[in-house]
Length: 505
Image (cartoon, rainbow, N blue to C red; front, side, top):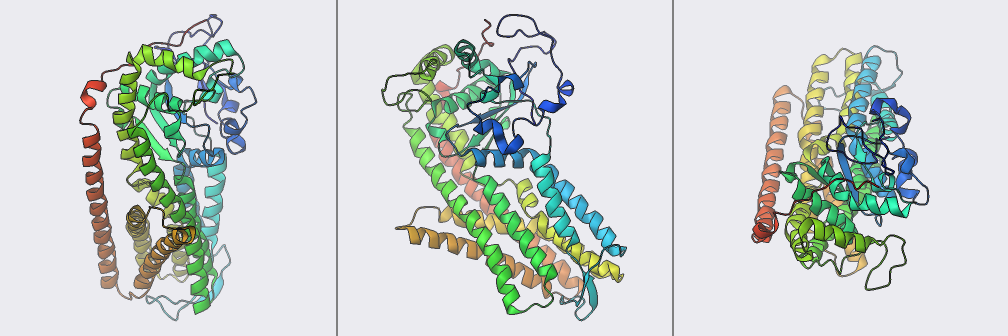
């Protein structure tokens, strides 16, 4: 799925050497179409097949677009799901929305069947129309297909593939060259989980990137694995409840309860992961404040135990630290300040950037496309236009507002309660809050029966979203002040520069 490397050279025009010292012809990405999908094929096979030699997947390039930094002790399926979302999610959302609009046009033209029932909206109450879930159902299917089968063309570095795991000599040289790989990487993607901050190699990669690039804050992206189930939890909740609303012939209390519980169940899952994420970030902040190289974990030897590996990671890392930082103390100071600050700055605030908030709310827009198609069939274009404006408001303002309110509430209630049932009850409360806010938004919009009311509802939604954004900014400024206090003594430890090229044979 993605392209990988043997070595990073300073100039793309040069012919890089392989580990035997022979000159090779530079292979171009477009000559290897079958290798583009290998890293994440079979739902992240490269993360699970640690006993298989994957080195043959890699090939020489002049520079690396993205260096993947991750902990091999984290959940492999969660990492695979997150990477699929990061690389295929935006394209999947766009393709799904386009398919929803196409199905809406087919419904309006009368090519697709529908269920005849009376409209319940205040805009056209009592009017008989044909409703169908074609837009929502098709968009959901297209999103899933593109998410799982999409083929992004990024050049990435993954240690399992790009460093020979079977040849001890080549493995040692590859590990010693990590600094050069990082130096010639344009971006660093940190796939973060609770084990990341405890692994020495992970911290070394992040620290090396920070000290070998100018303005690293613009080049480092940190995404928690908890982001994946949260995005899918919110998205599936909206998609399933939208399908149910469109197919329900009568809005009876039982139907409303089923829809509410469907949303609540998936919101509960997302709330659980969010609260655990914020607890893990708080633990990470405390763990890194007392970081020492001796206390950090590596693959082969920990807690003073004898190393039985052919290639001792800790010994190689000690050499790297002396070459790059001059002393272990300088590296430890960098981890306690710059690395700690960078991690918490991106993990302790809003988990979903605004773009992902819009992607999560896409199923709402698909549902509005179905309701617009029902009005288009009877040529009620005025109501269709009003519904279109409401759908955009939900997608770009109102549901992001609900997500932001959820994040604020989770941030305040993330600490573990006295016992297990109290902790789960807190998740229930957060999920109920999200469900109630969503239901209230739908109820208010369904009660508006004229143009003026629609305009006021849209303006009110935008204003509330702005207030929520302001509250999050206030929280971010508070976090920034705390992080600035962490970095106040960082000036003497930020001058280390990672240099060098991969060591030839």
